[in-house]
Amino acid sequence: MKDVVVIGAGLTGCLLALSLAKKNYRVSIYERREDVRYLKNIHGRSINLAISQRGLKGLEQVGLKEKAIALSVPVLGRMMHDLQARVTQHAYGRNTKEHNYSISRNALNCLLLDELTSLDNVSIYFKKNIIDYDLNHLYFASGEKIKVATVFATDGVNSAIRTSLEKKGLMQFQRTPYQHGYKEILLDSCHGASLSLEYLHIWPRDDFMLMALANNDESFTCTLFLANEQLATLDTSGAINKFFDDNFSDFSPLVPDLTTQFLTNPHGQLLTIKGGPWHYQDKVLLLGDAAHAMVPFLGQGMNCGFEDVSVFNELLNQYGDDWELLFDVFYQRRKENADAITKMAEDNYHEMSCDVASPNFLLKKSIEHELMRRYPDGYVSKYVLVSYTNEPYAFALKQGERQAKLLDKLADGINTVEELDWQRVDDLLREYTSR
Ligand SMILES: Cc1cc2nc3c(=O)[nH]c(=O)nc-3n(C[C@H](O)[C@H](O)[C@H](O)COP(=O)(O)OP(=O)(O)OC[C@H]3O[C@@H](n4cnc5c(N)ncnc54)[C@H](O)[C@@H]3O)c2cc1C
Figure (cartoon, rainbow, N blue to C red):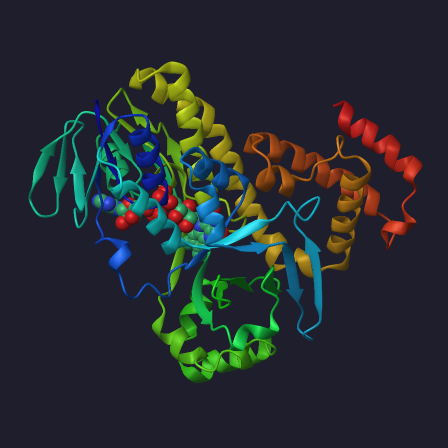
């Protein structure tokens, strides 16, 4: 058995370790935190995540897809709440089978860890904080040092491995803080009963928004995204109550302990990490957020990390473990796609916080659904490509740019889908598909 080392027992690291272990590698995992399966208090930090096709495919490869689905809640579309508490909605997919699942980050991590600890060829070392890496050794905060051959770095957005390699001039990354931060609020099941579990709820308010995503105990994890400076000013009960009453009057009565939660929960920061290369010789490969952290507005960070693992597996089957070659092919294959989803995730902030409230946007969404119904082979929306197919993200980005122009033309001068001139649609669509 060959030895490999995985840094970080988060979502990507656990999935990667599982797939390597199932291919008969002897895997050692080093994780900074204690075992999350025994942690009592995890509130206030992204409790749930939307998982879609790419994430499910990764789980399927290690036989955990159905178990993960059993822990989750189906999310069929978005429901928008305006200032007057009126509600509009649209479905995500082409049919009811195409939808996201909301899953607890912690439950998913525990599922992966349980599976890992059932395997004889996996050792997980918790409370091992790596502070440096010199290509041959890992250095821990405890002063310990160990010799390593091949390292898979899945140690997240603030990757210590990436930082060590950057300091040696072997990689170059930009770290771009997002202007908006976030704060999480838990809406318990009895107060959340008025919200439909099967929708992602959005309160879009132009430059900021509130979102609510159901958990499988029928509670909701709600997240306020707001400019960092403004979020910092919400530091008294008075300021918090006024802000919520002014902007989310139908929401604040649902959370009796709103101010307590708001003042206790951390102010989350969002970051984009972009750069390369993600590997060095046959020594080290970065995957997941360590290689490409993105803002969460398309719900694809973990999905993209899981797709990294699926692609890595496919390449390992194809090339065998000539790590230097494999790492390079992997990087060539993934970099363009990671850049594409990072861009689409950033662009989607405006769609979620602002566009979804506009009648023109909702008209374009209705047109798009009708196009997908009438031309199932000719038109697949960017959202469907990203969320419910395994088409490369770079392809989805390109299609999305062309679709935006097409939809602008189709929506021009009309107010309802019924007003569409289908002969003109046929012509424009022929033009769209012929390029
Ligand atoms: C508010 C929010 C909402 C999100 N929603 C979604 C969503 O709906 N869908 C989706 O797909 N994605 C979503 N994401 C993104 C998703 O959370 C990340 O992309 C995903 O967790 C990345 O997984 P990872 O394993 O690469 O990194 P992480 O989950 O960060 O795991 C890294 C692991 O490495 C460990 N580690 C770190 N440093 C060290 C060290 N020095 N030594 C040893 N171990 C270390 C950490 O303790 C951790 O266990 C969201 C993110 C945020 C912030």
